[in-house]
Image (cartoon, rainbow, N blue to C red):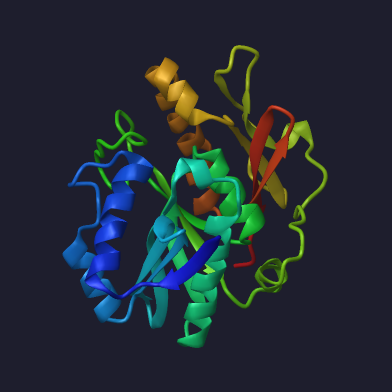
Amino acid sequence: MITYHELHSPEDLEQIVDLQAEVWNATDRASTPHNMLMAIAHAGGVILAAADEGRFISFNFAILARQGDELLLWSHMAGTLPAYQGQKIGQKLKFMQRDWALAHGYKRINWTTDPLQSGNANFNLRYLGATAAQYMVNQYGAMNDAINAGMETDRFEMTWDLDHPRVIDLSAGQPPQPLVTSYPEDHFLLTTDSQGFPLCHDVGPLENSAYFAEVPLSIGAIKQQDIALAKQWQQSLREKLVPAFEQGYRVVDFTRQGRRGWYTVMQMAR
């Protein structure tokens, strides 16, 4: 049986260090060390984990942050062992994090995610109701773990408005709904050609309420087979989304249809 916990003890947090290495095949330099986890738990952050028969198999943790005059939580890391992925364990932990934040007076949680990781995109945007508020180029510099090695570390900054009606519905177990249901081909900023290469489209000035940007469904497989192609995808997505963000657009949803997946990029009120 899967059980869920808020962690404080040195013994439990030592297991989270080991879990990071299992999830990402991470080196010591890429992992958050035991003493830092202890500091987070002691100084007002929150560390949550799921266990199967006493063994931790999923976790997340968040620290206190400030943006302008607003205090919020910054969810720095979350991961689930591959054998337990796809079972909504990480989703339950994320909504536990939301409950903790609201109970402690926080209205927003932010974090970063790789725009090319479509599974994370689907989870964050469609199943949590978060939005991407910023595109950050090479945010962390070079990283040599199994996921990031060989690529620049472009990231979305995700914003999770905890009292947004969509988030409230999802936290109550309502099925996720798409924000738009029509996807005109002439509104696509980026698609895939017949050979799997990114194809950028010139749609003219960004004047419509919604645009779309396709990404591969498995960037991990592309990295293993052709790192140059993976880099081309990163550069193409960066080229199309950075200007859109600068003009007030935000990434608000992710859609999968067959072998395709794409972001919905919507104009937000200024």
